[in-house]
Length: 249
Image 1: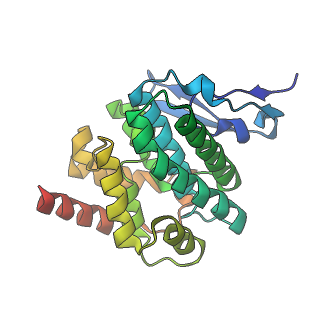
Image 2: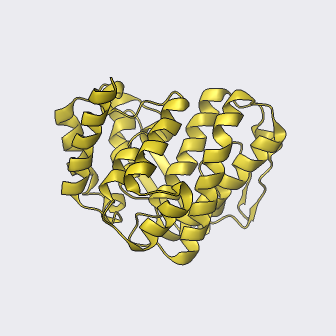
Image 3: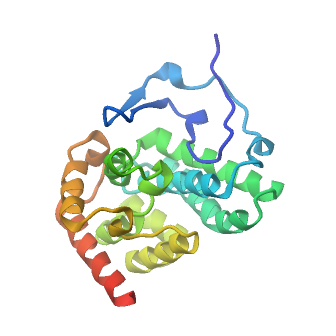
């Protein structure tokens, strides 16, 4: 039988990927599935099916799409095609999601988010995800943070950590944010917090010692190994982020 995908949220991008997941909350384990037969033969992306979704779910799934876009840029598997999809998707999410969060029944905004999420799916179908997703899985399992939040609140930190990287990562981030890594990180922090999403790990019940351990753990998984950055730079960015938040507070 053909696999026909009909998404009812704008976020996962699974309608155009060969990835799947199984979460064992009781066992504290998340399993990733990958197989060519998981590619749908047909995808029907109808934003009318998304109009009734509540604000929290709309934001969470939209941020998952944003994370997919950015994760495909700081990725060892990145290529010019995936970058083009990622830039289009990320710009679509950033320009649409805040307005949609205020006008949930707006069909035009729902369509724009649906397009962005599908484009993000095209991006990471080429690359898989990277460090922010690897970091997110135990945060969801241990602390109950919804996936879209868990894989996005750390994005400003990750951007700071790839400040010295060139190539597709720098080109893509520049096309999205129009500035350097420090400026992009600050723009993204303001964007997330404008949606009510805290960007400090402590806001999710994670103390510094656990946070550093989670960063170490994130590099061990396949998604972490896709990341072009380094552990030392990510830890330095984590410490910089903490200093920034203390100064703002």
